Amino acid sequence: MLPVGATGFCCAKTHQSKGAVPLRVQIINMSKSSKLAFSVAFCGIVSALAVIVMFLSLIPSFAYAVPALAGMVIWTVSEHMKVKWAYLCYAAVGLLSFMLIPEIEANLFYICFFGYYPTLCIVLEKIKNKFLCFFVKLAIFNAAVIVAYNITIFVLSAEEMLEGLEGFGEYAVLVFWGIGNVAFIIYDFAMKTIKQAYIKVIKPKVASKLK
Image 1 (spheres, rainbow, N blue to C red):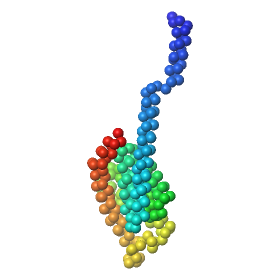
Image 2: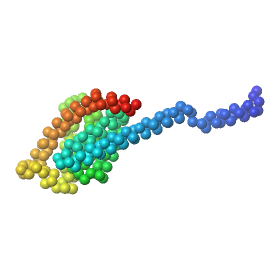
Image 3: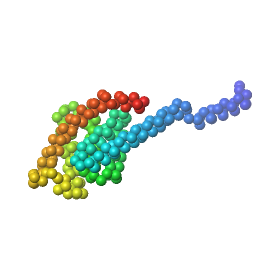
């Protein structure tokens, strides 16, 4: 039989232990907070870099190449953390680009296609049938071109959109579309090559710095 004082001490200790958060839980919570802070900081840096890249679209004839490059910058996020963070960066860069950069074509092609496509390919390239995979990619690209083209001619004009193709007359749109599809095939191949180079050469160095 325990003394009265000892019993009271045990009850108080039990009551205190029930109200306290276990050390293991505290460590897990701290770890989660640290990972979240790191993810936000890393995505902030990548997004800032992508916005800087988008500013290059102000240079004449860079309206299509720059969004493609910005999309590749966004894709790198998916190689170091969950894919959802890459899509968050894509949305943030799209919003900032529309607010800060007065190049409508570049912004639209970033939003409609180039900004998310390199990251989306992570899922698309899991399709085992190569022909089906290519067809799906081509369909997504053409759907994006239709949306971007219609929005652009609504904001600007068809003449500005098809500048340089006036000599083709009524076939200018078809020529523009054909050139776009050829350019997409080249871009898709180049994108794969750049991704492989990043994964083999740059990713290990970045990963070592992030540890």
